[in-house]
Picture: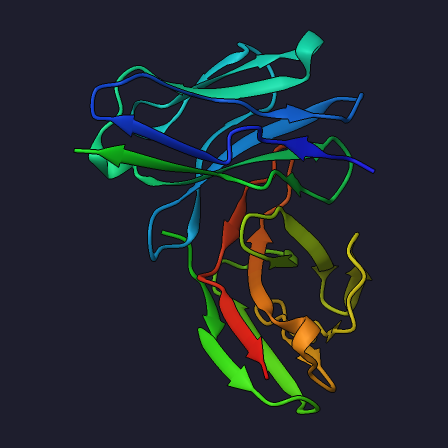
Length: 113
Length: 113
């Protein structure tokens, strides 16, 4: 079965600190990759996605993610977090030609003002 | 913002009751999904649909059933609720294409006593 691993379950940072959240997946074929974010009390929403081309993908609110195929990883980064980034972040994998998405267990980010 | 709606948002119900969780989207998406999510865990796909009159079971076994009579509507039914059904249920839709993006509803938190 496919799996998506997010190793950091809970991250606490101060404002202006740099952020990197890990995501690894187990599928060996071609994949589309996503990061979703859920702010407190809100829907899950798309942060960024990768499907081909430049492995460094830029998303909303200054987030970016890098796809490293050899490591089956798609880590999320932000150079300087803000208090408003406090949320839960989910990595998701969509194997090409599969109508299914596989999600990680999420990472709760708490940014202290 | 995605136009996908779920009702009720919260439901507390006794064992043995029949319940239907509603999900509607106004984006005309063919594909719709139901996920089950427990705190600190991955989203698990329990049902999906490619279009009207098309439904499939997901990776996580579920005693629930779904129907897709109209494009915009994808209700989930539990014929006899049990405490093990206590969870959060998330509905999503996607437009299809080469790179699908899923749009999520706000979720229904179900507590079965």
